[in-house]
Image (cartoon, rainbow, N blue to C red):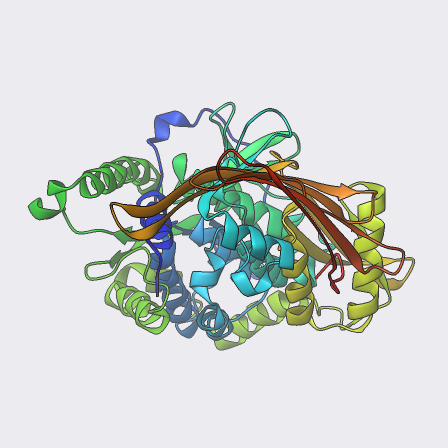
Length: 517
């Protein structure tokens, strides 16, 4: 059952998922020269530009499927937002069928939740959620502030890490089976930033960081967010990669119904549609061929309709075959050479881990996480198990997200985990408002706050101070720390003032819980 807070969150996602602006907002690009053609024959280099659009971007899987079946090569590929996710999977060597299967396995509701699920939270964070139910994350790290996005991207980031895992050691996206680019927006300068190197998962994460929904990504000194604000269909980028002809995928929305404009949400949603349309017209004018997918009857949050959306994209490409088939390779031997050259660039992911390296937090915290992960993931690598472990650590509340990548250290297969600490805490502030009773004459009202200090004694300890006002007024400071045996010892002192009489209660207990669980 969805809570009002969860419904509100997904409503915001639905409005902002296409948060885009006109092309005039872009002033410059970080462009890079394209790689040599992947095919050995003298033919035009074909590029593919994939659009953003939330769940509707899944139709692009169907477009690629039809193109492959009809021997239309893709020598360059670029995408924005959801298009960057689909494009990165295809660029790393996944087939359309594999991409579709991957998309169907994703728990999209969980991927868009703003924090780990309740069962993945630590014992102390579960206490916070039960006792302080106001969903307003705040911290005092740099004054009273909150996060700069509703979603830190923990779950979505792990999906991208898995996509990029086999290619983690590639530093130039020209070295992928298909040269790849994705577009992000520099939130300080307003420039379009074309990402062409670095860690692939970070680049795609930046391209899909919808402002207000996902937290921005800091890369190379820039604060980056969703590239749809400057280039939602990156035709310009594919041309700059050296493509002779660019095929663009356009996700076309029907005209707004007058009934949609009768609500605030409807007006805001339509305003975003108008802005993105202007953005796309500029790019589409530069494409040599277009696949226009009519999105009537579908919404940007329809992630549970993967098969329908893939089929819709396939049928759209088939219906516009006259525009696409001139770019097909008609000689079967030449098509096979193209596939062989592309597949030869595909990398096989590591299957064993002999070393774990953790970075991003202070040395003591990095060392503790490294020790815990070394015990659980060393040996035969199980990515779902690793992701579960990282989510549980994120559930402790200190980190926005934790990501991973594989690498080789002196010939030894190793795993690098990067911990991204929250920018606004610790210390953290939780708020609560409680009303209980059966009538006007008999009810209790209280409001309060909890301040939590983390990593005391550099062993995962916490100090929590509670202050509650109302029908029942109290103040207390429960503290917990990890002993040398990693068994936290909790102690609390509570001052309760129900009327004019002060009562002091001291409680000491031992919680059999590791600091990481």
